[in-house]
Length: 72
Image 1: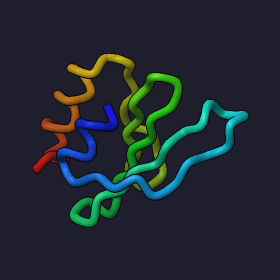
Image 2: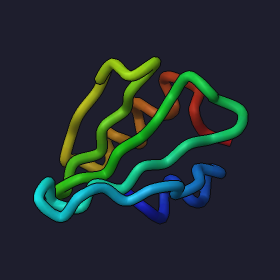
Image 3: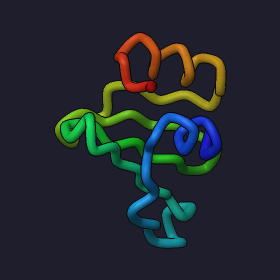
Image 4: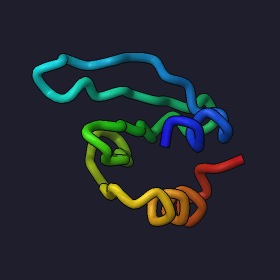
């Protein structure tokens, strides 16, 4: 998922606590309301701090990014 996010302009800005499987946080300057978290194989999309999508399947994750128009 990391490669997909970087290809689409998402920037890694923080890594969380190891006690929570080292979640990695991504943001995008064109989509300020959204944050993406990768954690334990999951891709999690949040809008304004509220989780709106979670999956371990890369194809579902990619399809959701495209549906929400969060790709370049």
